[in-house]
Length: 249
Ligand code: SF4
Ligand code: SF4
Image 1 (cartoon, protein in one colour):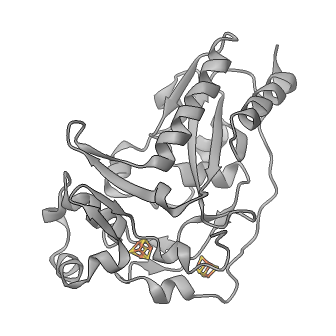
Image 2 (image 1 turned 120 degrees about the vertical axis):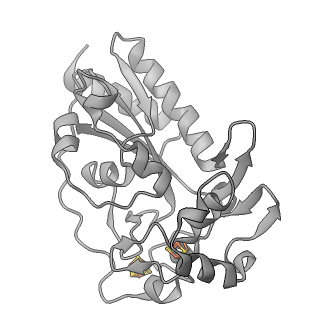
């Protein structure tokens, strides 16, 4: 089974898994798209092209979940793994794995990966457009959704979404509200964002961050922006999401 029917079956499977977003992007389109460099230090190291993941890659399947609760943005430090985990991504990645397995059982090669830029994939799949908070804004969920993907050599039918335009207009709420001053329109300075700094403070490399940024970080009442539930548990900064009029929360 090839082409459109396989794609339709896969999309149906995504819907049954409770995924809110499903899209197919041609691997060549991903390789050609410059996008916006918004990756945090950890991701920047890892960002790759589809052909780096799977040499015969033809398509990238992108799926997403709307955030039904802010608690899904809780960051938990798993000391044994030496990394941070989030409920939103744990749930999403389990469903993405199941969808990839479905395709694999039909003879395709698949590779679930966290090494592609999910925001750029979301634009290519037509899920949303970049907002001034540097997050992808969708018409249904605003910034409140998360993405995962897998690369495949299956003959899927790629999407050709129309450009989504701009949802921000004259609004500058997120730029004014960011406690670290990390935002300029459509671009976040990943070295200054609280999300990145907090992760780097444990199991990361905070000492490599510019001294002026570290001093500003140290001077903030961090729990006011990132509620703490313990040494290894906090809600990541959501100021630029919560203030956004496009937010679904
Ligand atoms: S997550 Fe917080 S620190 Fe980072 S850009 Fe948004 S408001 Fe600023
Ligand atoms: S708060 Fe306003 S400027 Fe910022 S992303 Fe949302 S709509 Fe755009």
